[in-house]
Length: 457
Image (tube, rainbow, N blue to C red; front, top):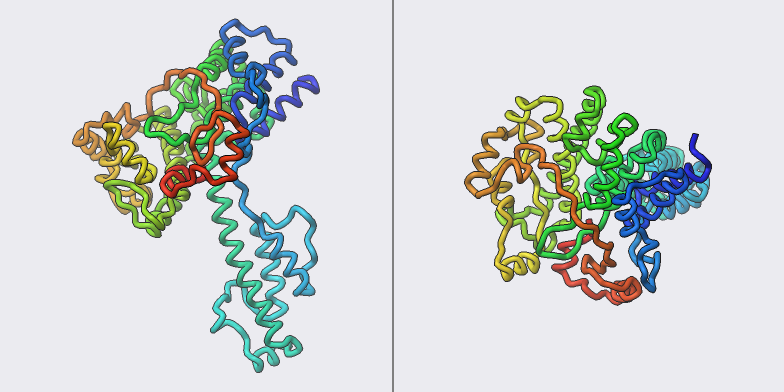
């Protein structure tokens, strides 16, 4: 039975899975967790944690960051619900903290609609409103035309607001899963069953949740020397490690080899469902924006935020799906159904930056352009065989295995730990106080840079 202090630390680590805490803060909490459990660490792990811990950051802004530590929360319908309570007798004034549940909003719309004889979904202002005779026949003649129209408009706006809220909540879930995989879905009991497992998952998730940096190079990899040291403790005690929990975030062949077939199938079902949800989001953004598949350069009016969030989520889900299918021995299925990767949209100034530095479009873009769209493949409308993907990769000089097109990516080598930078629209700034000032002043908010890194996945 863990001590009260140990459980408190585990609760804090678990809460971080749905946040964007700095890895330095997680390293400090993990140090405290090992100290509370009176665990003697090996020198390599102790040194890695000390290097990353916020305790070791000798800076004027010790422990301070100007960046939000939460994923952007959708704005609920609290204001509209309060207004409905003043106009409709059957709608009570709801308590504080309500307005984020779409089912709750829908129930209010339906209940209020009964007062003016309006059916849910009747939103046409020209066709669905009742005239004077119809209001009299419905028994609501005491409501004037002006008051009736006011109520009708409010319910119509509330339905539209509910639709936007559902969309934004879905986008938030997609963004969180694209960054940290299924970490935020882990229940506390599963997460905290083994403290060493919890330490690895919390730190690795914090690294995965880091915001992207405005660069023409590669982004930082989440598996660094600290994560490697913590994973080494799991490897040293495989019988104590909760490998099923680790597989939610780090599906390497080594990890999945310790997971039962039943648990593998459970994960596969979840990722398969999520892939289809993301494919729908991608298709919707594609149809609304009309991107050029041969370049994937963002243009004015394109919904780059939704596309890039969904593309990140597709990449994460696809990697987990491939790893699970391979571990379960479903190579024959992958031969017949091999949906391709999805590139993010690139801002025009970043594309120019690539060309100026001697680069160009990533070869994966050309492979993507040749293959059927993933949503068409998942619906069975178009065929995408593994052999087709391999042929497209060969034409453009891409290794289909190393590039993750036809097989799980090889296990990543641990990279060096690097301090989390303060970002202003994706541009690294050394001082968090300066970053806060620059953000308030709108610096680095040029159209291209904002489009390239909007929402800072």
